[in-house]
Length: 104
Picture 1 (spheres, rainbow, N blue to C red):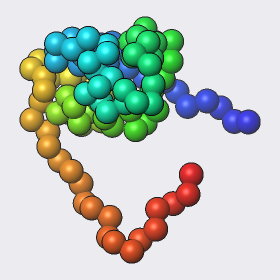
Picture 2 (cartoon, rainbow, N blue to C red):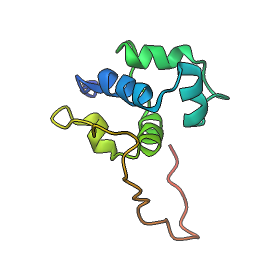
Picture 3 (cartoon, rainbow, N blue to C red):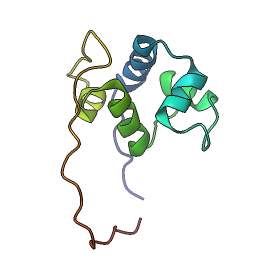
């Protein structure tokens, strides 16, 4: 089946740091991430305790909410800014219309 993808050692710590810095409960965090319809707030706890790794799109939602680059969250060599939310507002290049999404 192949090797599992390596998990960043500090991911759980950084996700908790983001929630704490924003002053949100786990339930509020889920709502701010826009995931309150698709998962229970206990999942946030599992992420913060390192019991479960969030999907990439959830990490992206954390980064946008915190105003940091995804790399800041997943790279163990980088620290999050002292003040959150940060000021990263990079939206990237929008996909050209008419280009089909890749099936997953």
